[in-house]
Image (cartoon, rainbow, N blue to C red; front, side, top):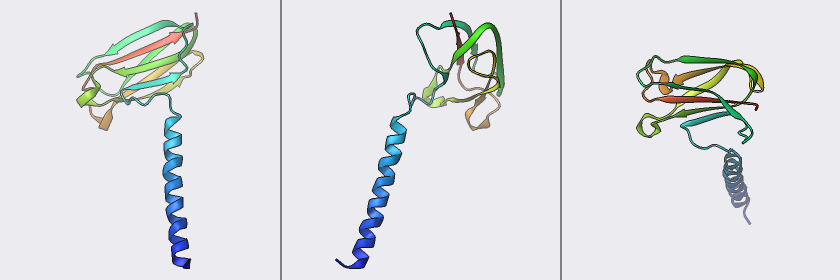
Length: 127
């Protein structure tokens, strides 16, 4: 076999392995819906302790804070009309999961000034 063919076969093999590795890493994610952001682990024993809707045409970004007497173990941020409008960017900017207080900051995708869709934020605490 000519050395050029070996090099070509080696490069082709490396490219195929990189695609396979990327597909494997992607399949490990639990939530592939861009309209839903989750923080923490959902559990049937948790109790809903905060439920708030940020309505479309509200100012972006928005921060929602909640202080509870129990630890907040799971937060779900859901865009209610995700189709054409896409999703929102959500991050925890204060407090933490498994702590009694948390601040979630929401921002419309593309850094727009107004939310295009309603966004529902739910926090679940220990029972």
